[in-house]
Length: 165
Image 1 (cartoon, one colour):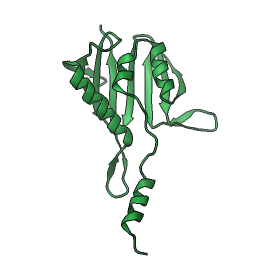
Image 2 (image 1 turned 90 degrees about the vertical axis):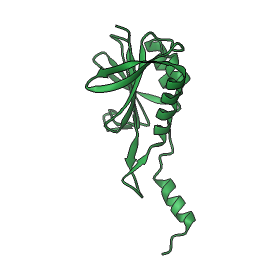
Image 3 (image 1 turned 60 degrees about the vertical axis):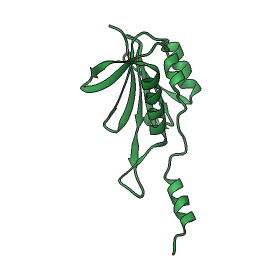
Image 4 (image 1 turned 120 degrees about the vertical axis):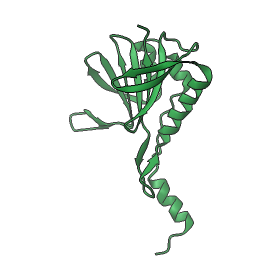
């Protein structure tokens, strides 16, 4: 069977995720409490994933097992009610059809948000959290006190809030 260019495009489209999350820089900057965090994630199509200690968890495009427990999600987010810290963990790649890795559609959102953070916020310093170094910024637009940091670690783009000490 001879594959035409149109067939190649069709095959490629079958392996590209259709869904993406619609978080924006403005959404991230609006998070100032557990209530506004929930508003942002619920309005952007995230599903409640439960409470684990002080962490409230949500997932985007989740898969659940027979007990209704989330076993996978395209994006994971959590909010710590004890110290008002939150994060979004975005997979940056998936196994590719034509190459070893393909960038996820959600990766472009990570790059878009971090580009706006760099353009609109003032560099603060490198902050270390759980052995990862995050570049952090002080954002006057942020409704929340603290810093916004980001890093790509172990295949995930992570955007995290660091509360003031």
